[in-house]
Image (cartoon, rainbow, N blue to C red; front, side):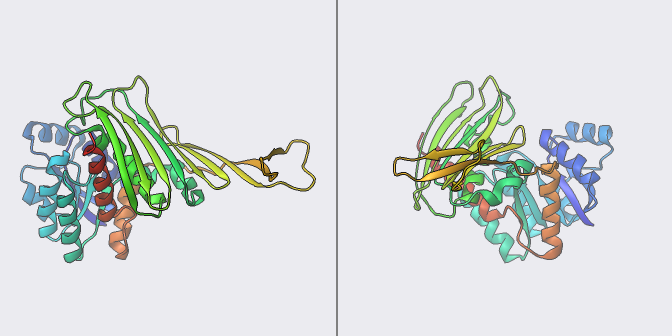
Length: 319
């Protein structure tokens, strides 16, 4: 088992602590939080070991799980890496692209492993359908959330939209050609609602909308590709797949048949992939343990995290 320590005992940090304590692949050594009162409270309430000194915790573990505010990710990561520790780091990977690249190179130079917490890659709905998403040419995403003061220290692009940026980059095998975006600050000092258009060199276009001032929660992505439409509901964890194939010469009474203007006849059919329930956060943490133990590439690499951050900042620069 890998010895692991968690940095940060906020809302998400407490979730990580609970799951790591349950995991059969990690030995939870303890956690660090700069807020002494909060650290002692969490330790007492959940019976975790609280380290008052950051260096002491890092020295005691093999893996450092960084679940602190984004602005502190870089310093925490550098401390861990220079002490020879593998790092799991929550999204966004860092505050700046330069910081992300420095971390990525430092991890490689020290022959360590690093993974970024883009948890939607482990969403059971996306996992069930990812292999069916092939060369999408138009993508539309909506990620809407009710207002919550937590996370408003960064623009909604870094808070919410970056999930969808990472998903899109993972399924579009082409460099980004251009980025356009607009954002509006309604309640916070940074944009609370934003829209972006990403164009890729292969012609694919992605239209993204993110809001943290919505009246309802929504996390949906739609992928359009040759002969298929795929809708993924990350919130409800379900998938809709509508596909087309050449129509049979003798269609059945209940077959759905379409004929286009050129006379091509297609049959529409629906595909319902089996979705296996999981805990996405536990999955991302445990697959990282597997990558360390087998010395293989993590599912969400530091390069992936840096690439998502680059696109996010290109969107923010449009505001």
